[in-house]
Image (cartoon, helix red, strand yellow):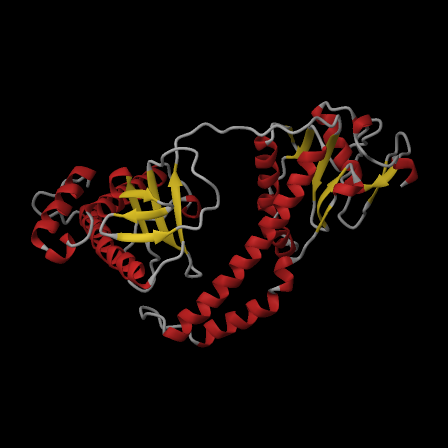
Length: 384
């Protein structure tokens, strides 16, 4: 969104008024949790009690009554959802790293604005977004709304840009493409982000993060020199350096997304069915390839491919990755030992087929998915 100076003042004022109900909910929840309940506070700390607290506060505090009640009520709903999720995870005895975060106070210089409006708190007129309280915002529409939105969330990201996310109740419509009669197998990797049975559709490692690493290191040093002491707010220079780093991270994320979507569109347009390795790159975070694997953005690329296939009505088969590097795509024989990562050529001991390791794995995806490998565009393994 393009936010004028007047609209920015209004949004910051609404966020300042919304922080008070959230922080008060956190305080009440903590008192209930440790047992120091005041009169009238229920152990459940439910939404009815929190709604009454907000009504009483708006009656007593004029500055709180100056803002719209819609975002203030919605932030109480958000608090209830996050607290219920945290309590559920604690009762389930989940490890700390898997639990939802316990709601914490939102500080002025640390918490980014996020305002939720229901249908009665906003309207769209002449392509502009009108929020309760007389706030008018110019929206740069990414696409038209298929139906009337039921709610909207106005928020600011770490780079300082403002966005509006609309919730629309509608059915997903597919945009079918012309049939091609071809299929493709896709294997994920680190040397190349995606190796396919078609040489023309391989996705090389773009290395967007590596190209931006020099600037990221400089911004990290700027933040380290200005790092505030514990319990103190960051200085203006610290916040400026943090914003510069956030902008660069946002740019890199956009480059990765753009590369993934363009490649996914090309693959989906040229093939009727896709056999995709159901790869979960989480374990790579604990390996020596963690940095390069994160830069490859395998998870985002796989998600873009599946979304594009769903949008255009293509058949996407998710293939379990177990033993895909040990099986032969020609005869189906399985090697006795797993291949080390340094060995990039697969040689079948049963039939003698020789092919690049990742190309063989991509063809195994087709066989496991039950697709016809003859319709895949792949050079014969014996001649590779």
